[in-house]
Every structure is written in C-alpha cells, then in structure tokens.
Image (cartoon, rainbow, N blue to C red; front, side, top):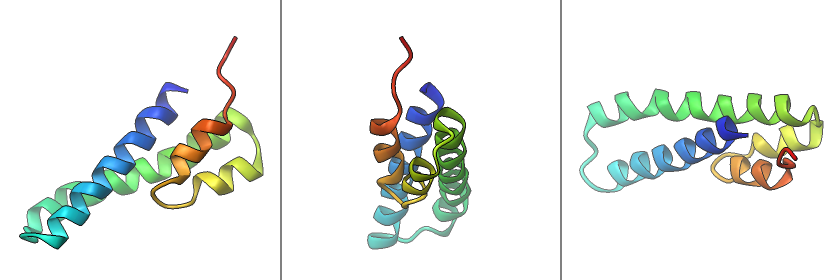
Length: 80
C-alpha cells in the first residue's frame, strides 16, 4: 500500500513540475530529468494497483493519467 501511495504522489508531483516547466520557462533538462520519473511512477501505480487488488476494474482506473493513482488508493482496502 505504501508503494502505491508513494507512486501516486510521485506521479502527481512530477506532472505538476512538468506542466509548470512547460507553462513558464520550458527548460529542456527539467523535462529530460522529470519525464522518465513521471513515466516510471505512472507504470508503478498501475502495477501496484494490480498487485494489491488483482482487480481489472481497479487496474483500469489506475491507468487514468493524473488521478488514477488516487482513485486506486481509495479502492484498495488497508490491511487489518
């Protein structure tokens, strides 16, 4: 569950950095550095959601860019 939470947060924050960079100064090295981090976080969200739930519906919801990780977090039941 911690992996999904961290990946969802990393995906959201990295996208915010990428969009802020694009809207303001558009420094190429920022996109080169943060872009792969964002992509890895996105894939990790999908993989973690599948691993935790084994539910196709939750996995498909996790694949929604930006908010998918947050939706998946709400659908994952915390351990007892």
